[in-house]
Length: 122
Image 1 (cartoon, rainbow, N blue to C red):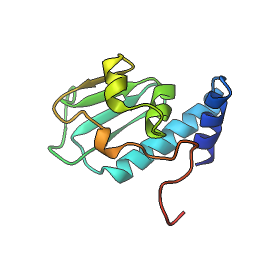
Image 2 (image 1 turned 30 degrees about the vertical axis):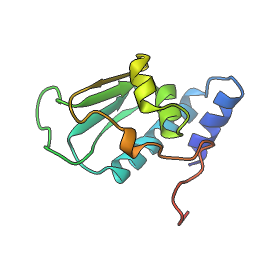
Image 3 (image 1 turned 90 degrees about the horizontal axis):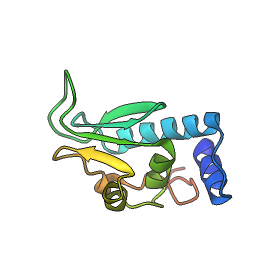
Image 4 (image 1 turned 45 degrees about the vertical axis):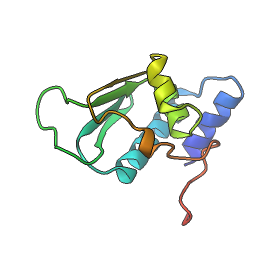
């Protein structure tokens, strides 16, 4: 998760992560989210870098999904690193979440606060 650590380091230095680093960090974290919470009932969108379906439940097939979470890439990195609570992000308008299952509290964080893996194996 080098890109994740690099993106977090930039944020810690009050800098915006460069576009390529942020894109790779978001994509790594979306893959981690899909692996940690497999399923198809919630669509998590982080435009313009990616989207995944995750969380067990009914599969979405066509049209607008009933459960959607959407946020800016930097916000997603902060959520994934446990630096921003999901409920706080929703309450402040930094995350748009709609639908009964669109609460990612139970699957976050995805990484440690500095981008380190939470898996014992790595």
